[in-house]
Image (cartoon, rainbow, N blue to C red; front, side, top):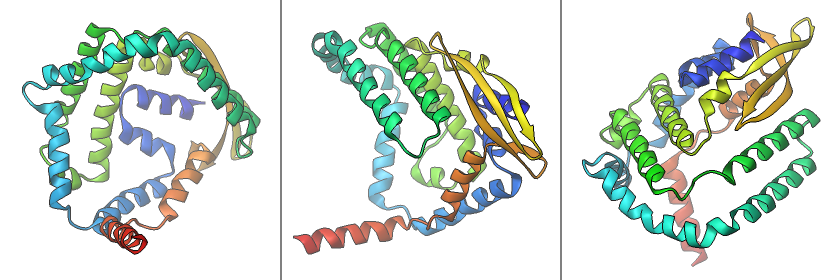
Length: 272
């Protein structure tokens, strides 16, 4: 139960380094650090095109007039949303959540507990989004301000600097982005930090190195609970699902971005 609570607290603190270390045993985490460097080596040199694309995207968020420019680009979409989509939003959300719930129930890889949890999440988020002030102009300006401040706070100047980050440095930057995203969602009424503060975990059962924990929390005012398995490994308690997902990623082939791009181009040429 304490291990689950620590995971929630690390997300509450936007500490993705700690979250990563708490998610998997130390040897698996060490493999992630090694894999990060191996993936960078396999990706090869950054192309001039990718450098330019990265610089353009970053510049849009960090330019001195970024807030005003981004809002001017967004305002036509806000007008369109207000006049065309907003009246239909409740129906669209109802149809979308119904489809998603049906898909979850038909999924044969999910346990019954996982299905119940996912269904509860969809219900809570559907309730939030139907009342969220998505077309509000001032909130849009505020959200853009958060996004811009977050981008500037990353202190990244170009693609080469981004590529040079170590695994932990990248996770630290990811934590900053996570904080910015939570800030934007909070503007629209979805307080993720409040949700993480509400997490409570209690042991349901324990048999040697295996246990089951009940996790409860509140999302957008809706109480949600589910049960999850935990396994003791190397002196710590972990989710076997998180370990399995991590090991699957680590065992996957490295992606050679340049080689993949050439292959894709060759296939297109052959088709033509």
